[in-house]
Image 1 (cartoon, rainbow, N blue to C red):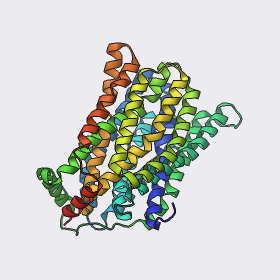
Image 2 (tube, rainbow, N blue to C red):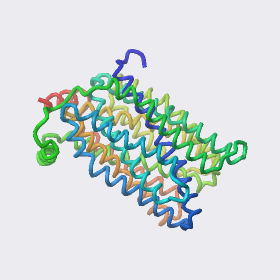
Image 3 (cartoon, one colour):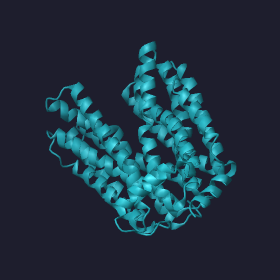
Image 4 (cartoon, rainbow, N blue to C red):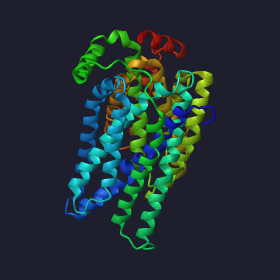
Length: 425
């Protein structure tokens, strides 16, 4: 973190702050809590799984629709931080409220989860777009990578604390129920997220903007329409986003299908949790290493390194037979998971017209959200047809190959910087 400005350090801290939500709320504790509450309330296992799936789909669809519109509005002077605060407060408030919902109100839990998810994802649109305000093209890879690296550590500290509280409750070492322990975990997550966001709100300022017009909401729609209509002017940006759609789909599929794939190998849940935690700690230094190497070899080169590593992961997964094999696979994922995501964010930051950064990060969010569809579908179809989940994971290799081929058509660092300046005039 040496030699970084106060704005860059404060921006990085938001990754540290909000990653606790991703780990505790989205991925682990809340899904288990909801499942237990729903079953206790008489909802069948199949129905509770369906309701949880619906809630995720609703939240994803809403934020995907809103992303480019919100991004376009945030390009107005002074709007970016205001909109960031709206979604940040929405996310943290309803995460905290999850800790006081009565245990038999499972529908209210779903509603609050949808609102927290919209708050989290919405704040990330503006957070990602603030990268162009706090850093220049030369330092963007490093700052973005540090953000992802700090996010991995920032997510694990409160998560381990929450897991410890739940474990002690289940072992009857502390006199609280599993449900109460989960509620305490939601409160810890919300407070962690809120407290460590303070530097972001206090020190990060919007540098690039356009002047406020009358009827800004209507004008935002018109500017968005103009961008889509004049797509040739931003051809390189959309080619990069198309490439990103394919390779990040592969990345997200491996992340979301990891536990299911591990279960097929006979790995128990305790071992799986340990493996995933270790993977998070491995991802921390390697995210930073990717940023350092991007400084020397350019971001596009390191994106290819990430794509190649993930391609190797897909091939290696075909030969997986044991827990040791899964450990090796998880370590490989840890070496490139944060790096490829961080450099994708900073690469777009270099490519966008700076005074329209929010609009394009809105598109970036859409491509990221909908990229979690094709990969899992491919894995499911191939696994079901062949009766072999190893072949299902191998099929994801196609996504990395397509993404890598399209990425060749995107300009390198020097051209990105030049075109960014041209677009912004």
